[in-house]
Amino acid sequence: MGKVKNSPWLLHYDGSSCNGCDIEVLATLTPLYDAERFGIENTGDPMQADILLITGGINTQNQEVVRQLYNQMPRPKVVVAVGVCACTGGVFKDCYNVLGGADSTIPVDIYVPGCAARPQAIIDGIVKAVELFQKRSDRHDRYEIEQKEGGNANG
Amino acid sequence: MGKRKVVPFGPQHPVLPEPIHLDLVMEDEKILEAVPNIGFVHRGLEGLIEKKDFNELIYIAERTCGICSYQHGMGYTETLEQIMGVEIPDRAKFLRSTWSELGRLHSHLLWLGLLADGFGFESLFYECWRIREKILDLHELTVGARLIFSVNKVGGVLRDITPEMQKTILETLDVVEEEVKNIQKTFLYDYSVQSRLKGIGVLSLQQVHDLGCAGPFARASGLNLDMRKLGYDAYPYIDFEPIISTDGDCFARCDVRTREIFQSIDIIRQIFAKMPEGDIAVPVKGMPNGEATVRIEQPRGEAVYYVKGNGKKLLDRMRIRTPTFANLPGLLETMKGADLSDVPLLILSIDPCISCTER
Ligand code: SF4
Image (cartoon, rainbow over all chains, first blue to last red; front, side):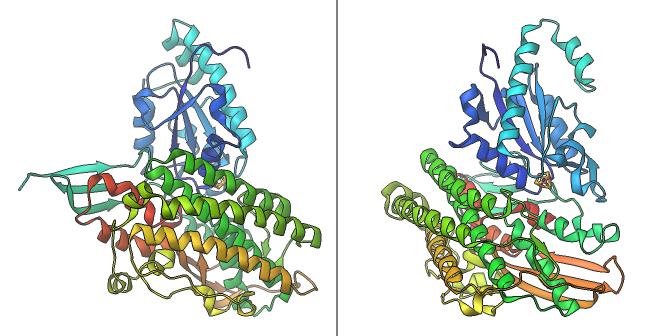
């Protein structure tokens, strides 16, 4: 990881996860793994967040919430899907209420595997997200970049 | 008299690790009524019985909730064993109880941390989670995973806890006990923590009984209800008494849970002292035919499992009643007349596990 110029803020939303990945994300932020040493800060406010960490799949009820959170975040933004549920739907893929992974609703940049995803893997995902965020914020034609890279459909 | 207004709370909220939505009907700063709106985590897990066979469902049952994951898998497996008339070896029973208690330790420490976060004591939150990592290391040592164990199978368990592992576990528990004693001082005797917890969200014994609450939430109001006393697994051989408090406020709930941490440590010590030698699993043949119900005590309270099989691979029905589901009515009751600023604390005080409840 190169030099980081600014400090991206992180928003965590729990989709329809089983809690496993959810608390691993929290554990990643606590002292033993301490993801905040990479210059990120955990926030609860989507309007100030740069990186969206999403755990668990998308179901019919939280789809709107996830879309809204994503749209409320300022550009440039990076989305990290944590755990196989958020990547593909995981073990719940066949459930009647699960629409699929996070990418069924919003564009996802980084996929972190694991059930539950281990803190080390989550840290790796966050570091990649910080790098990507740097790259995106260095560009001025952000909107076009995002269009190309993520296929962002709804702004 | 102020004007009535409705304040939406959640589903995405800084203090909530999980999504739940409440419409709070307010009059000035007081809450008149709380209307929950759930379903954000509903996956339809029980519907998977149509697609997965009863053995695969053990892994699905474990993923009902990542915190009490082990006990969900265990409860479901024991229900199947009851239907199929399987008697598991004694050593397997003791092993199952060990992991249950380790799970309780990590869950209670997690909850204490979240509670500290709820009233804004960040460093205490971090301290609890630092101690909790030691328990997770023990999980990793014994089963190779931090949260989702997958060590249950019909007829026993898949892994053994060797004497060397037992030694490490006991040594770690000694350290954990000392450290929890330290944070217990802060939780129970610190003036500012007390002023935040005492007298908040009081429920009487009659109320928790009528509302059908379960687990530490009910025990904090004086209800003597602990499913471990039913005597499943190794618990008949263990000497322990359910921990009860009578105040019924947030402070009592915190008190009950901290004391349960010491109780669990004690139970694990007793288990290792009495652990019999022998096999850890018996071979099982056939398919489940019939129905059974099993009740077990999870960190959050009583969970009920119901399974109905028809002699084929795919089951007819699997149903899980989780403790948070039983505690939600109690939560809504505590909210009546509470201040808006206490809402996060009240929600946390039942130790909510939304993904359990909505499955
Ligand atoms: S990936 Fe596994 S641990 Fe994570 S939310 Fe899904 S089922 Fe739970």
